[in-house]
Length: 307
Image (tube, rainbow, N blue to C red):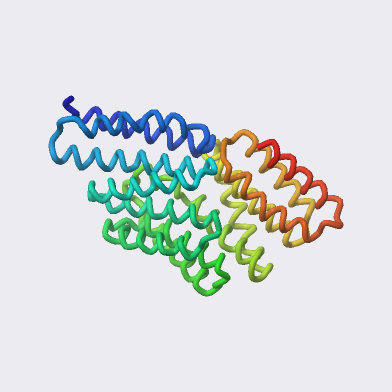
């Protein structure tokens, strides 16, 4: 079988479309489609083509595994996810694509963050930063810096968290006008605001509730900016906002935002939205004497059971 540019373009286009679906509807909405697509990518690699095309195809198939790993992670299957991320790393190295390598390291680190392994996450982010610098991609550096800040927040290291958080907006500004590959196109000003709010929320939960003052406006900006193409991010960010309101003792607002987030999450096939409700439960449980607290906890329990 002879493989041409059009074959690779077609595969790349399908991956981009499925990534957009993942953002809208969650990893569970496209995980099986990617499973079907994977043998097609493998078959193309067995075909005849020039060396430059072979290298490009290796990068496209690497991104296929990158997205497959992400959807497995989002569906609550971390072991399968890691297997695909590791395969993606090998193929991206073969393709010589440092920016893709940086993105895969970011996503692997995010999985460790989600499962509360910040030290392991920081190792991945550090390797990702090296690749992003080699690629000369400030956007990828911004993504990784913001996530390094999150990892340091989980470790309770306020100084390091805020140092990394201050660098990310500068790197993001430096990326203006750059061509953006599909794997990093999600990181807009909205996502940067969401990350600032996320880091501040974690610091409020783990170190000092006064960080809510910075978290709430940043999360609100992100939520207002997310459209129907980013429904999972909107739901996840709204849950963090509900956490901040609960930490500040405003359970009326926490209930309003939290229940709205669950309504959105109900239409998304993502285990992460269910998992994100755990810190909300923990924050609300501190005020269990309030009738609103009992109502939120009952609704969370019902949602997680049905999911």
